[in-house]
Length: 291
Image 1 (cartoon, rainbow, N blue to C red):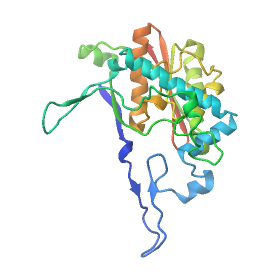
Image 2 (cartoon, rainbow, N blue to C red):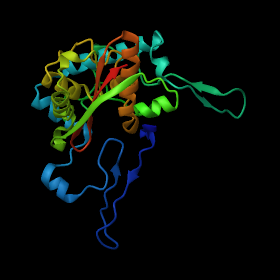
Image 3 (cartoon, rainbow, N blue to C red):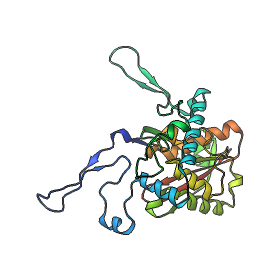
Image 4 (spheres, one colour):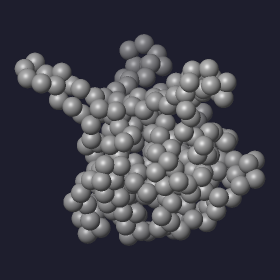
């Protein structure tokens, strides 16, 4: 048996000050590490550049001709799907209630994600300014949220499940990772998914659920279109994604697998693809199958 998961406190990401090159040096640069780099290797800057996450989304949008309207539409639909999933109780099935002790009175029970916005519309999103590039298309509204979160999975071998009397819900059929240029890190799920499906002898048509990390609308649309998936394919993030829920980095992979598992159980589907981009140029994909 093993527990796999992660936690991220993005709201407390530090500002960092790198070690000075020499004593009493001046003009030291402080880095905000929430969605940016820290302790940049000069060689990395020379070889690949050090675009921030938002800038890489702009690069993907430009490379794949993804316009602002399509990004805002995708973001609005993500919010709407997540709010619907909250209202009908589907999200509650996969959330562990966390009691927050109070000095006086009863504990506060934290059991609902805070980031989804029910009042989101395409019209409201269209009023937001570009966040990362003058004249760009990536905004705070069509990007994932800066959130705190945690998620964990209990994974067992077949022998381990039998020994401990566990009833598995899904099995992991395989996983793959791939590298891409850091400046377009968001497209990483494409080669990772292609590698994995080829290894398993499967196609996208075999997937009943597709959970994509949804770091940015531009990134998501770039991945979907590169894989030949329609922007509005109902298999993609049926309960919305990180634009609505937030994207606490260390928890995101486990969260995708958790959500996909519950959706397979609920829908009776067979297989799900979970895939995500990784900063500095990587993609990782996993296919699971309902037992």
